Length: 396
Ligand SMILES: C[S@@+](CC[C@H](N)C(=O)[O-])C[C@H]1O[C@@H](n2cnc3c(N)ncnc32)[C@H](O)[C@@H]1O
Image (cartoon, rainbow, N blue to C red; front, side):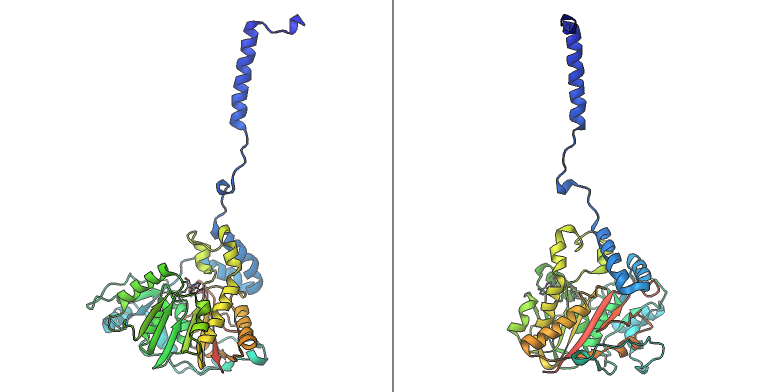
């Protein structure tokens, strides 16, 4: 036993070694990481993964080209500010070879243009679409784009002699819901989810609204909308008897102001597909926003039903999203029509948008296969959208 007992010097050596080993061990101890410090999968990647799963099934062979366009630079259009010095801006636009796609769409092309892909059979019964005559677009609405395949960008807008900005840069497809809303002189209009305000600005540009109500639940987004209106619209238009800005939960609007408006635009919150695959900031595919994302179709349906109830019998409603998702588009419209009928005894007719597809096929790449409504698919040669829109006519 004596031989096994270490001498003083040997004992010190062993103790030193043990301490050194313990230090090394401590350094290598595996600490369980908390969720917040675990490597984060970017929300943009989660978004793309989710879209690959659903849109490859939904769009089939069209998904790869749509996906590519979504990931590439978006194309913009310049909505002219009719309250400013338009003639000078038009000259400049034409000098740059941009063209007013709204004016070109106003041409007298027949609704049954053979270049337009045939629409597949639509669902029958209550949802059979009603043929709509080509829309009577206000001549005040002018929106310039560069031709198909031309990716020239517009310069930022400058203030004109009246200190109003000369144009508003937007996705040209965002104008389609406003065009099909078909606002006529004297109409009262509600923009239920309006901020940051591109479509409200376009509605004001028509100069047809006797009264426009602009609503959004988010007060911070509404302050962006106010800034936009301030930069583009003269104060005498911005008076309370013509324009009302409110911050209210749009889901309950139909209970407060029922049967009131000639036209209602319901441009709902959605997965904003283009933003979601490109930007981390405020991305709805972030893990923390999973529940919010899952609840979107319910919120969208509630907003649409509310918009339907706020419309006068004989009036029209446009529903729109900037998502490709069938769950947020066609399914929401079909469900809302059903709820309006069964729970509120409100009857709606679906408006056939084939004419719109024909009029604007030079500018946009239309999907043409939606069961209800129409969808602009992003494409490298016409990189606008996604934009889904559907028009309903309230019968009673
Ligand atoms: C797609 S954005 C609208 C874009 C706007 N129409 C435009 O053209 O600039 C959807 C808007 O809905 C608003 N929103 C979300 N939930 C809402 C609710 N319950 N009631 C009213 N607005 C709501 C959001 O704050 C957001 O500004």
